[in-house]
Length: 161
Picture 1: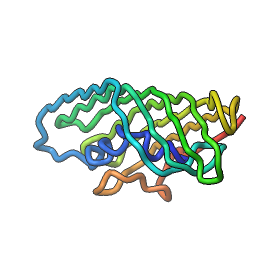
Picture 2 (picture 1 turned 180 degrees about the vertical axis):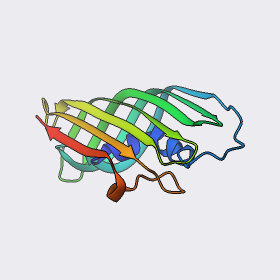
Picture 3 (picture 1 turned 45 degrees about the horizontal axis):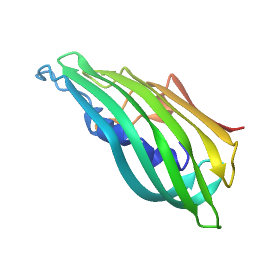
Picture 4 (picture 1 turned 90 degrees about the horizontal axis):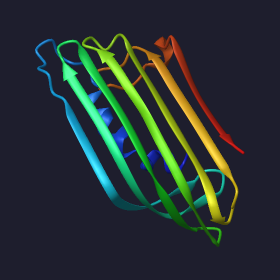
């Protein structure tokens, strides 16, 4: 994941806490979180453009289910951004993220996919587009973090165009 994706992925931050292997006594716990017209301001990278102070406005839906068999989540977030770049100038555009994660109760069979795409509509980098697709299949540690050395499949592809 590059730049803005780290903070745009509000869902991924929440998901991290839920990804830890589920204990055998876990009870069913479906949760859905919806946000409309939420805003956040951060200092990060506008992908393919540069660092700056970025304000995002977004809608998101996150869904989590935990039961005796494991954990499942899906999320989507769409919105706009406006950035004042450190190197001078401004950029504004749109972004979308979505993904999903699953793990069994032992954490040995986990998989997740994360996508992040966007377009700079105006200002510095106008017309620039980016796309990122990350995927992992394999075991996770006690904190729900992927174990790359034991991955069956793992890739992180980021492209500017």
